[in-house]
Amino acid sequence: MCIRALRLREFVDKWIDLSDSVKINRLRLSDIEWRQVEYVVALLYPFYRCTQAVSRTKGPGIHKVWRVYNGLFEHLENRLQEAEKETVWKHSLCSAIQAGIAKFSEYYAKTADAFGDFYAVAAVLDPTRRFNAYNPSDWTKDERKEYYQKIEQFYKDNYATQYEQAIQEQQDKEQIAMEVKPQRKGI
Image (cartoon, rainbow, N blue to C red; front, side):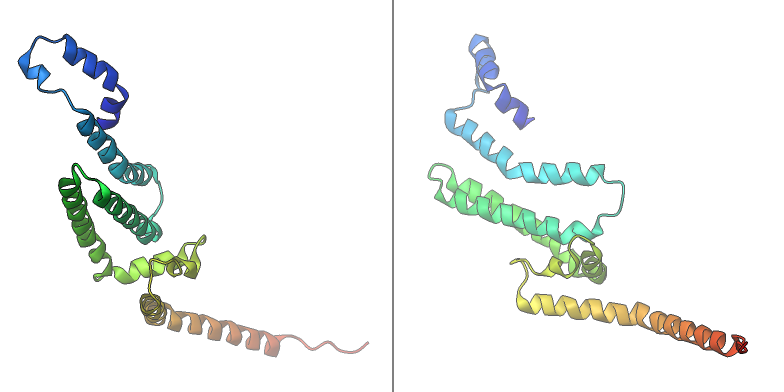
């Protein structure tokens, strides 16, 4: 709705100018308020894009969770730095962005709960990223090490014995095939 209002600003202003209603005249936005609308649109646009992208997906997207969170956090932090330079409406803007970061942090913290290992494994299983999922500047060396260990432990707990059994079964089959294989007699 805000995007539409910005696109139609000229016509909204004309409609208000033509109105005799006091109530409608109170709807007029000042230039500063229009700048605030522009800023809010720019602030929220990446969230809109992510929502649209997630809504369109037909397959699993768990492998993208941290990448999306990190990109949106970076966007909010950059916007907060910009807002701190604003002179007219700095306080309300900064407090709103900080509240958004705090709420977003709550959701992000849930990726470390009981299912956090799944996010870690899914990020590594993304064929476009693999272990590069933990190389960006978003992860400290200790965090990368922690997640490498989680992934290794997840593998050991869930797949290592199956893998070793499959290898052993394959070796047994090959051994049996060698023993049963008929010997060729010389001609």
